[in-house]
Length: 90
Image (tube, rainbow, N blue to C red; front, top):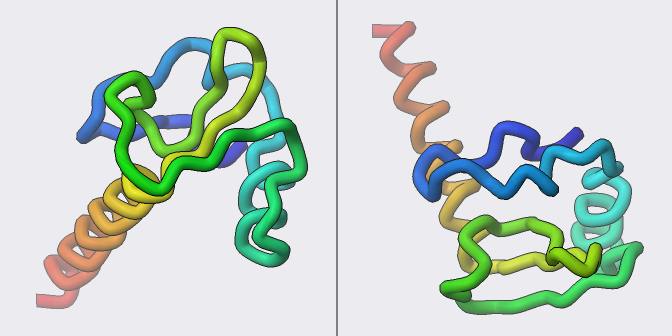
C-alpha cells in the first residue's frame, strides 16, 4: 500500500487512510501515466486547510489528491533520502 506511513511533517493521517485500498493503481498508474485517477477523485492544485495530506479519502469514500502538498511531501522525503545516503558515504 502506497503512503501507509503518512507524512511526519503533517502529522498522522486519518485512520481511514490505513484501510486496505490499492493506492498505487488508483493514483500512481493513473495520474503518472494517464493523467487520470482510476477512482472517483477530486484533484486540487493548491494546499487545502481541510486536507492535510497529499492523498486521502473523504468520509464519503471519495478520494482526493492535492498536488502542492504531495509535491512538498515528496521533496521532503527525497531531501531526507539524499541526506541519509550522503551521511553513509562520508
